[in-house]
Each structure stands twice: as C-alpha cells, then as structure tokens.
Length: 254
Length: 201
View (cartoon, each protein chain N blue to C red):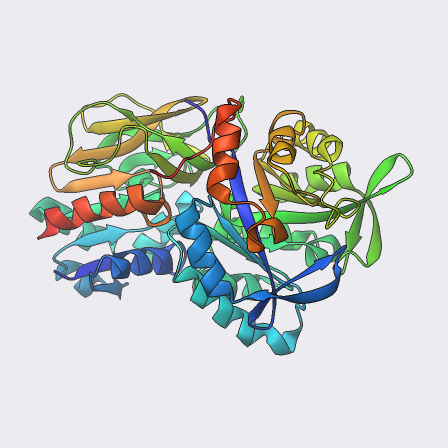
C-alpha cells in the first residue's frame, strides 16, 4: 500500500479573481476562483491551493470571501496563503474554510510564527512555502513575492522550519516558475532528502513527463501547477493516467 | 435528523458542516453540556493536537455528557482526533486521559516514513461494516495525522498501512470512527458520511 502522489492546482488570487503571470510579474486574468475550484474538484485534483498574491491588508476581507466561496465547492483539502502575518490571520483563514495555511515571508521574519501556529492548529495545517533562487552553487530564499533576498540558504531554512513545527514544505523554483521547462528536480530532491515531512514541488511544469520526473528523480510527494491547468493545456485526469501507466501511485477518480 | 457537531473551537468543523450540507443534512454546532445531552446524533470532528481536544472537552465540561450519550446509544462519528479520543490515552499528550472507551494507547507512526501521514491512501478492509457499505475496494481517502491507533482489535473495520498498520475505520455498536477525513475525501468520503447518516435515521 502506497501513499498516492498528489496533483495540486494552484489559484493565484488578486482580489476576487484568479490571475497568472510569468516569473511573478505581468499578471493577467484567468477566471473565477469558485468556478475553477469546482472544475478541479470534479477532475480529480487531490488538493487545491489559493494564494493571495497582492496580500495587502485592504484586500483581506475579499480574500477571505474567496476562501469561503472556494471551500464551498470542494470535497478535497484546501490550502490558503499569502499575507498571513500572525496567528490571528491564520485563525481567520482556517475558520473560514481552509484546512492548511502557507507561511512564507512572515515566517522568515519571525520563525516563532511557525511554532505558534503549529502548536495551535497542528503540524498538518502548517505548510512552509519557500521561494528558491539559485545563486552560485546554492539555493537561496527569496521573500516578498520573490522580490527580495532573505540571506538564508534554502535547505537550512527548510530543516529549521520543520524543527519548529512545519508539516509540509512547498518549494517554488523561481528560476523555473513560468518557464514551462520542467520542475527543478535537483532542488526538490535536495529538500526531500533533508527533511522528514512531505515536499510539494512547484514552478516550471508543462508536460506530464515533468511531473513523472519530479515524483521520481525529484523525490517530491506532491506537485503543484497553475497555468497549465487553467488554460486546459493539461487535464488532471489525463496527467494522472500518464503517471499511473508509469507505475507512479496516483488517486484515479472512480 | 439533525446532526450535532461538537465544536471545541479548533479543527475541521466548517468542512464537516459543509460536507453534511452537500448531503442535504442540517447540522448544529454545539459546545455546551446541554446541547450534547439533547443530541440525537453526534459528530466529533478533530484535527491537530490530542491535548487541544481533550482539554477542550474537560474545560467545557463536555466529557461526562458525551460519555452518557454514547452509553445511551446515540449514533456517534469520530473523525481523525475524534477517533483517537476514544482510546485510553495518546503518546502525543501522555499526561492526559482519553475517553477510555477502547483499551489501547494512541502512538506515533514510525519515523521510517515521512510524517505527518499526509495525503490519499487506501484501506485494508478487515470485515463487513455499515460504514464502508458501497465503498469501492480500491477507494482512496484523505489522511492528515502523525499519531494513530496501532492495534489489532475486534472493533477495527479497516486498517491502513503507512510505515505500520493502523486503525482507519472502527465500529462498535453506535460508535463509529474514522482516522481519515471523510469531509475531504471526495465521493468515497461522501459515501461514508451517507452511511453514517443512515445509522442516524
């Protein structure tokens, strides 16, 4: 019996709409979040992530309303993140309908936020999101939507976060994000070998072969992608059939 | 039939509420001894730390009315921590006492696998049950936990294997419990909830 590898569509949210961009810039509209959520739920997505990319205080009520609308469409887990700066922010997101939160910039600034939220909600509800950029022979942590370096090395930060109580690591390769050239399997394999919790790979997916690669060589437990699903470039069902045919355990909807 | 959801402030209450709504069933959140004493059917959702749930039950004086209701035969569904709470104790919070309805301890899954056990897994069905009636043998369910009831007892309906075999579904008279999250397990999870609702009718 094997735990299925997870396929996770991600909705980048600006206000009440899904948006998409390349390398974190040049955003354009990609639809209604509740509508996309319902579609992914029925197509066999294993989980859904919604990220508030604007993450401004003014937009918070709108994002919470989006979480509520999305959660109403789902019979699968929902992870929400972007702009969670305190345990109170985490509480409101989880009580609105998310099952897990992602912490990113705020956790780098205040690592104790990881232990505080993990104690209150359990490690299974805390996903540490890392935006990673290759600099020299190391991967470095970037914050504020990937705009600023955090002067932290990715592997060390992942280990520290797990020790503090993070239950999963979501790693986005900023070098690959939006390029459609495949996941950074070296990055995900390095993190997966270093930590005891599941690792979600993100950034660069286009072809089914990219997913197969990240689940084998990349040692990822789950893979996340956005635009290829939104644009109907790739159906989740066909992707899972492709993976199953290659002996990768996936949940095929009955 | 109205379902009473034990709401102790944390956990997956909104998700369970929505899942019941999708099945056309009314539910009410309850956090007082009176609400539990008057409940016709009870669901104890839970996710997170064993101590959070047990402390909430004791701080709000819910333990005694809950045990009374279970003894009276009120249909009960425990979800995730709601399953673990039925046992004597958990290694996650060794100093606290569980509901002691089942004589075993909840333990950590082995460190040989990635923890938490997070994601979709299949069941090893041990015997016929009402809860899994009509569920496909190969169906996947969503799990999110680190601790589990690792024991072989007659009330076990189905196990799951992740590093070791643990209790995934149990049934003992009116007491039902699942380690996975039926409210997050797609169509298979909805079938389990529907089966429980049938027991409440």
